[in-house]
Amino acid sequence: MLASQQIVRFTAGDALSPTDLNELFLYSKDALADVSEKRYALAALTFPFNKDMAGGIANIDTIGTRTQRFTCPVACTVVRAFLNGNVTAASAMTIALKRAVTGVVPTGATTPYLNVAAGATTASDVDDTNIQSVTLDAGVSYDLIIEGVSFTTERCDVVLHVQVDRWRAGGFLDVPDFAFADFTDGLADALLVGSAGVGATVELAVQVAKLTARGMTAAMATHTVFSGFTTPANLLRVLPVPSSARCSSRIVRAYLTSSANGTGNTVSAVVKDSAGTTVATLSNNHAVDLLMTADSGALAIALNGGVELLAQDFTVQFAATAGVVERASLLLWFEW
Amino acid sequence: MTVANGSTILAADLNALTSSSLTLMRTDNRRLPGYAPLIFTFQGLINGTPAARRTARFVVPVNMLVDTLAVITTPATSAAATITARVSAGGILDDWAMEVTGTLDTIAKKQARLLFDGNMDAKPGLNQATTSRVVRLLPKGAIIDVNVSTTNALATMVATIVLCSRSSLARGIS
Image (cartoon, each protein chain N blue to C red):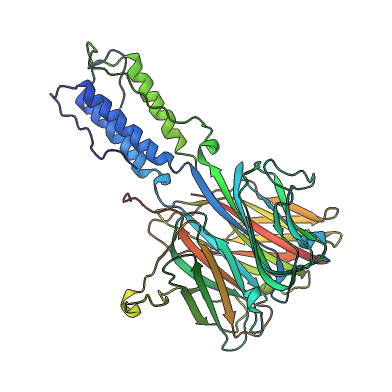
């Protein structure tokens, strides 16, 4: 919070006392400190470990069905993972967090990452929380894999609270340092700008530059178990995208992850804005790999309107050319 | 504001410095609340879906001021089908559950969005008709249950429940 709401005002002809000057800079310091409280932005990513309302995921399902892959466009930290579900788990059911392809467990992640103890012989509510900080690299895909010898989910959601450091995104990691002693009561001529005064101005500019870094959040659309024969209307998803002059958000990146076991099967997702204009098209050709990620590259879809608007409906049209797609997910990243 | 070493500082220079720094603070987007849509998908939701599969739970990562609760469905549903989404918050002392309900049609397209209209459980001792709110504060750490039910019998329907919220509260600067 601002320590002081008093604004130093100077009027021509006033004696510019060092005390006033110091108060001016201290006010700027307080204002920056207030902004600094918002250094970290949090996004909640929800991964549903279920197929559809007709049935959940079981230990006998394929790795493609049991894996949720995701990518973050900036380096970030998972500060909490939360599992809640209704499952039957005669033996332990676990969630692993690994780097895609290599299978390397990211720094800070435990093994298993989340755990449901054995013992539930009938479907029961279960939960688990992991508060270890896990570092995720920018642009790298990670897998959440549900594993176990004998389990069946009715529904099982894993929520990751992802923390983005705005200052890191802005390229500035140092903490603001406002220890102004540039103007002292003993200064002979406080009305003249010395080199120290210029330095203070530069420092202020550097700190303000940190504010240009934005927080991030994400929204995900997903569909499970479909093929090239599925009616397109049944593969249409809606992503509400809030738009407001107050939030000034924009879409900056999209990732399509898919798992498909049909050789040569191409899974695609077409993202359209509320006016029906295509803003991104992504596809994965599963000629070799079961699990794949497509990156839209940098997007700059401004969402800020001139007035407070209701959420716009962006649509995601999934499609496949052949075979069975176990899961396709479109992850849309916003800056705000 | 431009000053050079050795030049005399004018009162206007100092005022400009103060004003510009404050303007930067006031207009910076980081000072404003960010939106964070939370989306829950219920694929193949029908009238016979067990309750366990119709309920999702999440933990609120930051204080959120929910100003939009919407239900969006695709594509077609059974004739005269209805859908109801209910968002309740365990662990909150005074839990006013939010509820959205509406009728769906059978046209194979994205259906009209159903929006929260302020229908909440009555707060004890108050008249709900005059005290309903269109927004709801969900404190950090609260456990939220999203439950959905329908009379629809077509398994092709996908219900998307959306909570649009400001991820932090404004501080009187707009």
